[in-house]
Length: 479
Image (cartoon, rainbow, N blue to C red; front, side, top):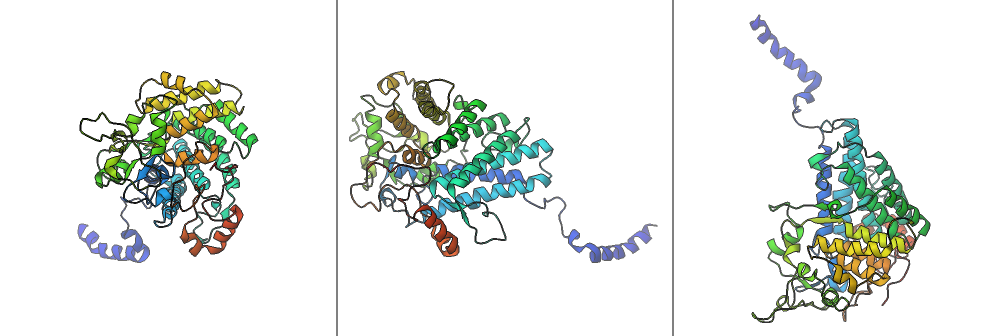
């Protein structure tokens, strides 16, 4: 019998080749598509890197916000963003490497054999969508109108740009749907490098980010801001630093803190402290801000000099050895990326109470106090009681302390500076390429590849220049 089987085998193989040749060339141990959780992991990593990076090709907001000042070059401090095509890097990073990966993940999850169970699939899709909402928030508050409804249509190489305010309102609806969709406890698990798949934390994050989105449009649509902020607060927002949305970087490359890569591994000495922030830290209504020692090093003129915190003037090319440097807490290989924190949420609640956008809870002064102390706690700067006594709650102090707390989060600081029109940042003394930038121009690729839609979008927002105020930014920056 064996002899007959072996004799028939070539015929069987021949028939198989004729009928299903492709199956013989498919490795059954390989997935036909990329597992969705890996796409979400990569999207989270790229998103955190985009917000955290100090590379002037990717993120220049610490310079715009006068937290840091440049040494070797000073183009970006003077608002020259065209030489390096910085806008193209930000646009491409968010659209291509974050939003597109998340879109692919959402498409794959329903049939992904690595994602088991309907509840898990539903939670994973909701988390991916929350991350998309988060990413689009930065695009519309940076550029204005952007491709949205047609952004990921593979059959359309020339997507239209949707109205930024319309996108924003749709993002809020999506966020509400995502919050409602989250249930149970099972989800991405370790593939989620922000919360480890903790559904309770994702709900708190989504509500806290919803509060942030509501407050961003407080001057544009007070009614929508009020309903958004109130519902987010009622549903439950961050209550301490344990809720913070952080990505913990590793000591080993390639998953280290991008600032460590940019400043330490590269051996470059491109940045020092900026005088605008240092002056605030040195004299916060007569007291030294203890966070100064976490943000920067002391400058010592001689070996025996006790040292001072000294910053370089904004826009003026600085000598690296003559000023304070970025502190080791920030440049450590394992220093985390921060997407949203308790201090920021507390400051939003203080503003919301002051503007009567939420009707319950504590007072504006209490939330302000919690915000300052949360920032002190995050930076391990001690008790903030004495500092708060010297810097009590006021509208200006709220804006200033939010700016100080947003150290190392330049993109968010820039959004808030434009929205609150405070603090008033110094215009570089000479050589500035423009007034203070209140948006970034569209990438030149958009003008070349999608010219008709680019021109329509540019006209719709009032011109593709850095001084065009976006929909949420109702007031001109003080000069």
